[in-house]
Each structure stands twice: as structure tokens, then as C-alpha cells.
Amino acid sequence: MKLSAEDMYQKYADQLFSIAFTVCQNREDAEDAVQNTLITYCSIKKDFESEEHIKAWLIRVAINRAKDIRSSFWRRNKVQWEEYMESLPFEEPEDSRLFEAVMRLKEKYRIVIHMYYYEDYGIEDIARILKCPSGTIKSRLSRARTLLKHTLKEEWNND
Image 1 (cartoon, rainbow, N blue to C red):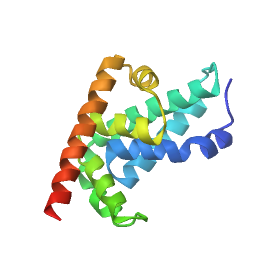
Image 2: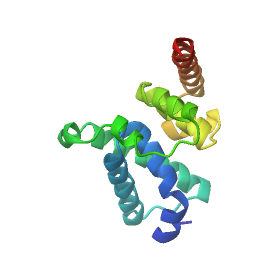
Image 3: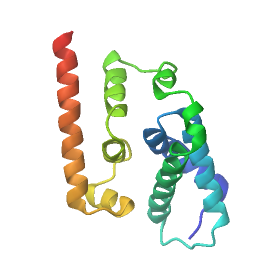
């Protein structure tokens, strides 16, 4: 099974951008990662088992492309995520504080938080996509929640 490039872009581009953004922490790099992912998808001769397999493969490739971009020389000259955050429309002030707290987490925690809460993947699915034991994913998710709780609680106490 393989979707057309147009169908695949319409279905998954926003999700791929979100996951790439959690790694890169800036819009331009995330867009580049998505574009590289789409080019890779269109150029491979792989036949996928199902649409869920396509989605998982795309997410894995987007994460890898984002990591490659993030570690490149050009990354040092890009706009930081804090500047991009100013252009995002948040419905509530708490939403922007949560977003900022998540973006300040280490990458390994940001990725699992994003996949679990925003992409609705389960622990086993995340483990399979990231090629990690499910216990590692559970641990990262638990630590990320604890860090977020501590960060946000501290912020609320300061208000």
C-alpha cells in the first residue's frame, strides 16, 4: 500500500510539522524536516502494510530528519522557538505556559509527550516507532509529567 504524495501531504503534513517542531524548536527547520520526509516518502519503493504503518514510518523519518537538521551547522543561525511562539494563537494564557514548559523539556521527553498527548499514540506504539522498550517510554512519560508538574506548579506559586 502506498498513498499518493498529495493524499499523504494532506493527511499528515500538520502532524509531521508538529513532531518535527518538538525536535527542532523552530518553524523553518521543522518545515525543512517535513519537506525532506515527503521527498523520502515519494522516492522510496517501499510497500507499506497499512495506512497506520505509513503514518508511523513518516513520524520516525520526520524525527530523524529533524534531528539531522538540528545538529547541522546552519542550525546555529535560525530563529529560536521562543520567537516563533509569539506568533502562535493560544486560546488561553495557560496554553502558552504549557507549550513553553513542554518546549523546555529535554528532547526525549518532548517527543513522547507530543506523541502521547497530541498524536494519541499508546505506549506500545510509541515504543515501536522510536525503537525503544515500552518501559523506557513509560519512564520518559512519567518523568516528563513530573517535570511539567513541578515547573507549572512553581510558576503558579509565583503568580
